[in-house]
Image (tube, rainbow, N blue to C red; front, top):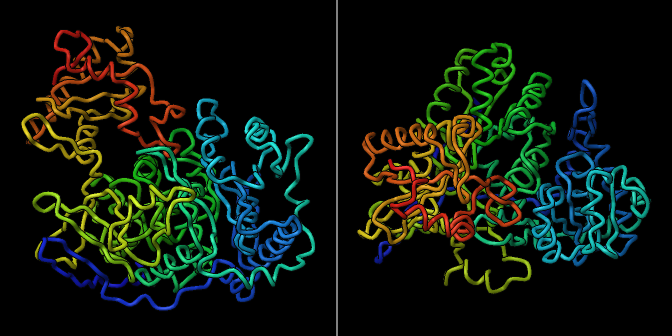
Length: 596
């Protein structure tokens, strides 16, 4: 494992019970803008690989020197079109070298970009989200790598009069990205005017609680966050990091955290076309065999699938762990059994463990705000504030705190939405995240905190008992495995906790004896299996139990906002859209209801 910095915090206790947790470290120097990173590494390591994507049996690689040359030429084309701070570029397609070049060129001369989740353009049911995002951003230009694949979205009426740029395909009426490249006239002058307050991009929130909002992301958010990350994890500066990474760039984790980690440290990013689902995990595995990483970033589902593959493949274990400095998970807590299995596999390959860690933050926070930057004994700890960050912890119940944050990596607001911006900042300028945390040890704040759910997901039973839905949902899903793809807990104002279950393929296979009755799956075999698992959940020592459940026949709708492009459920949207099913769940006369 590379060098890490020990936790060191200061804790302020206020008379009303509020706590202010701060890093005891100073942040130090922060870069002016992302273009300065590119300029530096193009001079210091011009031949080093910056970006790579699969091409046949190998990789198409682009060096830092070549990247800067092409970025400046594309930037020249943008300036020739009169583009600037008020003419954003909407990006419809996913990760690619061309996507990166256009983004970096725009940032180099102060043109904001707004990357969207691919499903908004490719799934007809998500058209409403595409129109909403385009209306919020108001782009002058729209880009998609494959003009044929994205032809439907590019041809949408909302883009009438908007220049449509593609890497290839698309037929008539589109501009090739290569045609944007021109003599970089005026580029140096425009780049010199880019500063910390220049907007780099607009990142859309996931829409897990409401319609997506556009987070104004200035250069200072990106550069401060990378300074904070490098300060907490100094091994990143010891050797340039190398990533084999699939995380989508429309999301802050992939597009800001990992992409800029590579760029700021002169590392190499090998773009992985895989995903943490079957069968796309096979592409990720193939790419790991081709190129080992020094830093691994993934969601828990991805690590679970990799764990399963590596258990039976010693060579894959070796390729994954042999050069690894850090194994970083985010998006949810990594199951402890997966953590333990990965530790065991790492010890099979090497004498020392990589740093197993995570961070906490949101789109509005760049995203990193808290990080576990010293080794943790188990999964779930999200660490302490990064240098320059203050965390306000407001008591919600004994030992549980709502967390708000303030620092140089926090957004100035939402684009065109002053009302919502005002709602999420308190009178001291802290961004109110809506998340809850608990100390690992109340007596030793240096150990940091662990995530304890979303406050908005909690609800109160008729007895006055609060249900901490986020953590309980994970517990129930574990007990229902492998029959539940996901679920929504409910019971506000009721006497019992209920669950609306989205079935897995295993569940649907088991339910071959059943039928669909007004939106619910009715199957004696599935009901017996789920009832037994719910009873085991209650018998396992839980103070809370799911007493009744319905299996939903229709999957969550992206177009209706029930699920985000990241795959997260919008619980309120599910409950509102399926109000009739919610009523049936609490109807004791309904034969579809499964009792736990």
